[in-house]
Every structure is written in C-alpha cells, then in structure tokens.
Image (cartoon, rainbow, N blue to C red; front, side):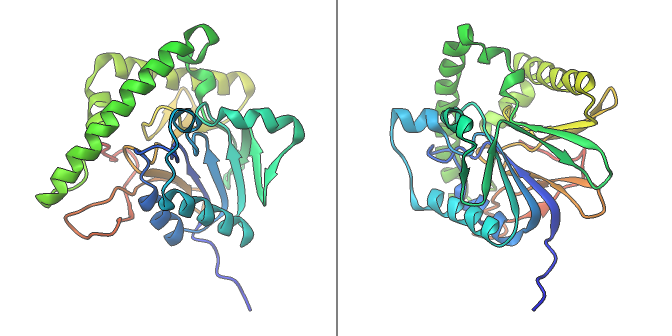
Length: 271
C-alpha cells in the first residue's frame, strides 16, 4: 500500500494561543485536516501560558488541535515545536531535550528549503524590545489591552454573522492604520533581517507580531506566518520550492464551515 504524497513540503503556523478565548481553534482544525505536509513547524505561542496562568480556559476544540497535530506526527509528518513568549514555560524543560511524542521542542530551528537555502525558524520574541526583562511589565499590560480588543472582535463578529457578513478583525485593522503599530512592525522586520545577515541565513520564518507578510528586506527573504487569532494565516512551502501565504479565515457568507483559500503573495488582505 502506497501513501499519498503530502500536499505541501512544509507548513508553518504560529500564535494559535490555545487556552485563550481568542483562539480560532475550529478553523485551525479544519485547515490541518485538509492540508498535509512533510514538515510541520509550530512557530511559537501555540499554547497561551500567560492566559492559562490567570484563568483556566480549555474547550474541546483546543484539545482537537493538539490531537490533530499528534496524529500528523504519528503518520510521519516531521513536527517541530518552536517555543515563543506565551509558551515560554516550556523552556524550563529544554535542558532535558524534551519531546512530546514525535514532536521535537526547540528554541529555534533551521529549515533547509527545496531551493537549497537556509531559513531561520524562530518565534520572534527575541527581536522584540518590549521583551527585555525591565520592560516585560509593559508587554503584559499590552497583552491585557490586546485581549480586550479580541473580546470586542468576538462579539462584533457574532453580530456580523447574524447579518450574513464575513469575519473582520478590528485589532488587525488598527495595526494597519496606526502609525505607532506600523513603526513597531517595520522595526521588528528590519531587526529580523539584520540578524539573518549577520548569521548568514538566506531568510527568516517567524510569527509573534500577528501580521502575515512575505517580502525581501535587503536580500533577506522575510516571511511571517501570521496567527490563528486575528487573521487565520499559514505559510506553506510547495514541493517545487515556491512559498505562499494561505488565508484561512472563516467566511459566514459562503458557508458555515471554515474556508481554506490561497491568496497570491503580495495581495493578502488581513483586515
């Protein structure tokens, strides 16, 4: 019996924030069920330890995501879990070279693309100035405000569904229209590219800032896979070595089920 070839060479997802009410776990389950890959990178903040520490929240849909990932690993997908800032509690186990089943846990990884180039895979919190020890209180304050926005998002989209309108993210829209947020995003991207230059990487794959993007920065291929809270995006590498961002937002107009669609690079709209 021959096994079907996986749909993609590699899939990269991050910022799922399981354990928080903002996580769109149902959409991610639908995506993982419909899309297979040789390699699956979980690029940080898959589990939201910050939120779980404050208040326990873990519905069945969040367990289903974990099961889907474990099943993929059991069926031969090479799964790597990159630790982020929200799941930094896992770093305490790094000394023991811990693995969960067939899932490898790392602070960072190097992905060798089909094009023969070396790509740094890292969550990205190391490039965030707000993650410095003396500024972390600001980050936690911002996280509290952000979760308030997500609460508004959830209720707003519940109302939009009643009127047959598609999903729309208020927090993502504010990021695209606020000068301070844009400066923060651009500074983050530039720091990632500069680090890759110094360490001789051809490109970087990250998450953290919840903004899906793919662009060239001074010869470095910068790719951010977005998130599964606001935009429901994934980065994929095709078997021929081409890269693509997938827009997987639920769309209440076309169907009650989450829709998985491909968006051409450079035309992906997050708001």
